[in-house]
Length: 154
Image 1 (cartoon, one colour):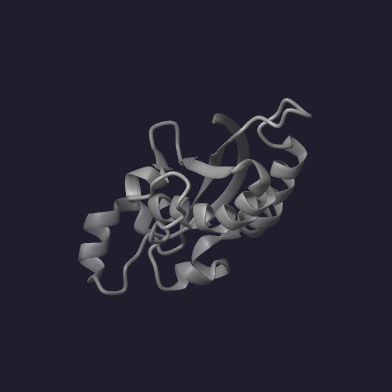
Image 2: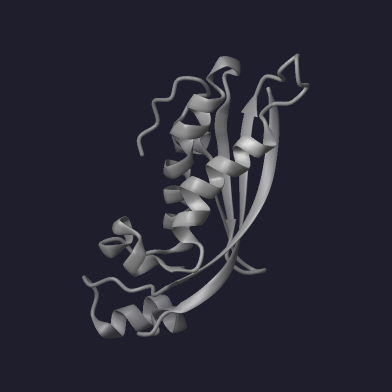
């Protein structure tokens, strides 16, 4: 298997707030990220796929196809959006970057793996940089996934 990582950028806003916590607890846990008006980030997304090299093209996966899937499934849904209001899952779940990273993995896994099924392509990881100091990564193997069996719990 060879890994291919591609980078994308998008901007989105969110408010970190849990309705199950008191106002004081929300301020303590989330600090300035609990601002009632929200705040925004310029995210850097890295998508890594792994698979066999296609002998005809010499590539793991067609970059244009990867760009198209990421644009349709992620960028069009997230860029210049309010995560709390525009993403169904984040109306009831705190839109931390950890949760956003996992959500992006869920949005991409099936379309990417179906598109590269003939070579056993897998979505290997999703990494999301929120700021120059914070980045988060979802790696399915670390969540109990064994390569190739597709049995992880999401």
